[in-house]
Length: 247
Image (cartoon, rainbow, N blue to C red; front, side, top):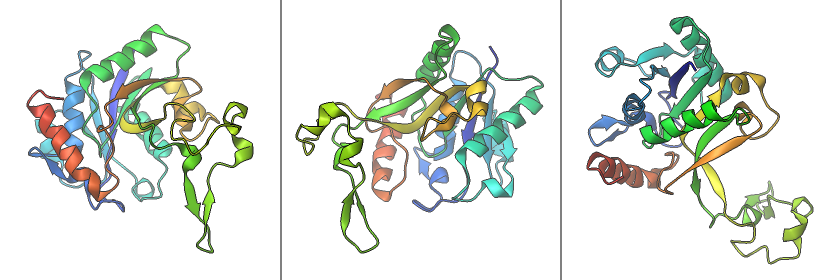
């Protein structure tokens, strides 16, 4: 199978300014997952889709190919799906052949461990019924039934309507954080997908590029994307622990 790695890391950010280029353990954040990908036993070509300037010397030093994003895919409202499709097509143009599998790693995480990349690839190679494999974290304390939103008048409202609940849950104490069982969230470390899944635009939300059947790789809860300032210290420690063999 033809496999390549695509990292998506744009220069700007609303949540944490320039988060993809924050320095952890002496390296910009986006570089960590690129280096993990190079440790894969499959010797994968690695590409970076970005608008971050002045990366030519770094790309030569660390053996990754830059894909310059078009302007319409550089803003905070850009579709990540469109970024992935653009990257896929650019990789195929450069490689000269169609991919079977694309490994996507994000620029605001540091935990796309090489062994997890290899495991995900091997799963797709051995199981034709699986469309994708993604990394997740277990966060059962965040019971979605207890989630709230603030209405335009400033009052709180539930996000999950009681009528939408599974009948086995309706008559239970929905305030119990464990009422829905274990809860997992995509943590951004890696998404490994078949080409066909990326291009088919599945109706399965919230990530239509994953296809219809996805298997998880469960990572530690501290493996997460940076989307808020409070996460910086967690990622900093995670990067340091990895460097000293204490992942």
